[in-house]
Image 1 (spheres, rainbow, N blue to C red):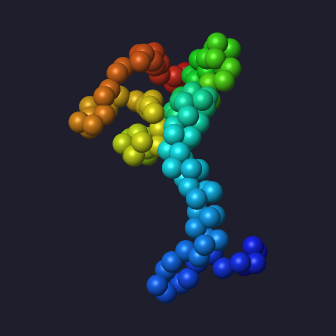
Image 2 (image 1 turned 180 degrees about the vertical axis):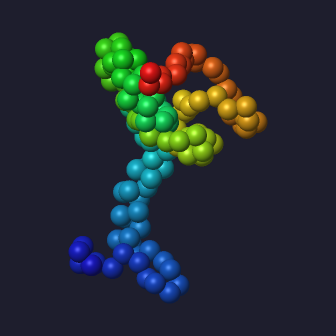
Amino acid sequence: ESLGIKLFQRRPFALSPAGAELFQFIKPFFENIDIVAERLRQNSSPQLRIAAPSIVLHDYLPQILQGVRAKFPAFRLYLHEAARADAERLLLAGDVDLAIMLIDKKSRAAIQVQPLLELPLILLVHK
């Protein structure tokens, strides 16, 4: 309508001469869209999506992430606060790249587990 000319006939569907001309004009764009999308993905900044409980995000990751940002300023980090079940679900769905959580004796076959550190724990009681 905005061009003021008929581009196609509805039933049976057929392009008008003007519609065929417009199609030939835009066809190269659509033929190369996969190539352009891949090029854009390769040129985008590297990213890492992490799921972890709030204590890990607030108490342990800031210092590590500060060092990563200093070395790789274009690196994009996405942090998802998540309990164990949510973190596993996000990981299995491909919504995060890695999850940090407390070790559990149960482990899913689709998830590789790598211990990071041992936390010293103490018990405080009132005298």
